[in-house]
Length: 417
Length: 164
Image 1 (spheres, rainbow over the protein chains, first blue to last red):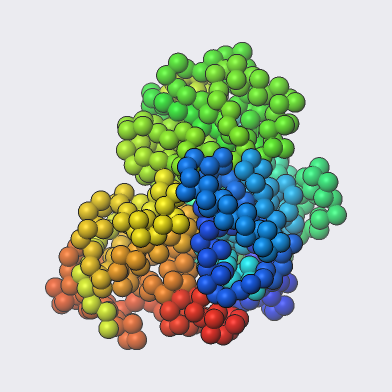
Image 2 (image 1 turned 90 degrees about the vertical axis):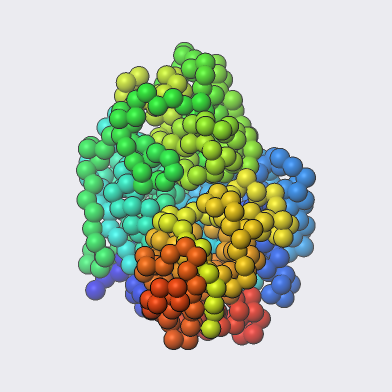
């Protein structure tokens, strides 16, 4: 029997015939930690007695979750990570250099790679055909020291997409729809593997949004084949030589197959306090929103900012709704400036944050007040996520976010297009 | 043999319930961080939990972030094991890596406050309060070895590498 993408990549990196359910030890092509998980990673690395990295050029630290630092303790953690980078020779992306998963996509991940990060959204790089997964600080510390880790080869769920998304409907709506159907634990310990003729209509930005949220269904990885879209994206990043075609075998074995007709997807929103608690945006009309947040590793890319700017052009946000926009990287921010999107957004009443995680995880830059509701393009709406357990988070696409910023209540973007 | 009281929770207790992102500034001050364990699910837990007690949950316990601080603060609170119907993948691995047992079993018949006795070798849970007896599922051999060494760091210190 043929192999799934997960089995193929883990076979190659473990030097074995890896099949779902097997335990393998695989070489790691890239390992990273960020500023909220990095300090414990460094301490576990030192506690284990390591004094050098297995592969300094494949080991990265990112200062993105609280950047710039909101207080002295986080500043001290940033100093600790800088010191570790100086001592060990690993590369550090500093405050303002962007969100780890966006930088991994733009500059580091390749098809066929095994990538481990001390951040659950490491799965994002699955969009490029990399087996990428999040782990805790101890696992990542050992990966820093040994350059390898163990995996249970996951069973895969095949998601076959056909056709094309309608106008006003985005990749975010598709992944929210899928998680709503299979549940927040619908893919626990498994990989989601995307295929079908609909992939030809999905940009790399779309794929990154979808792979990013695989973990919200519990998945270990969200994998796309490496195809002409991957090739063109890598070329656009000056990394054409990093491309290799990669796809699952036609006779691979899947745990199950889910078919999705893209044309049938409508603007979808996850309601508080879980990602699988979905409704259609039009069904939530009348839900007042005090803050709209556009950004994060899920939806902080140029295409996301472009659709928001197109809906907000020449208009003004609702007077009782704050609009916060955080581009995912300096590359995204600069391109958005050149295209005029940033000016459009500021004229519409938006606050522009520096590249980074921004308000997503409740540390700073947009903490919600008691009883307030936010429509966010992020990936999580857990109770307390944005800094206040007395607040409410709705998740939606950048188009739904922009339409909501205009009306002050959850709005189907097709109403204002 | 582990013995203690059950602190019962429902489904989908996330890492933000266990230790929210807004407390990330305390992550280098673990004793202070541990005072907030499971605060957004039960603000009274930290003051009531005693060494040896159990966290008993429904489905998908620990979903969300990769933050190892989540199982770490539960362990620091003295909890001797987590019993749940199912556990999120990263949390499961993190807990084992810290030497904190995670036991997958049907927790429906365990009530909050029940006195439990867990036999890790025999894979059994005895609910002393209601007399019920449960068995929990096996975990992969590599995780069992890591757990038996007290966590991943002592495991690697002992063996220097992963052993299959």
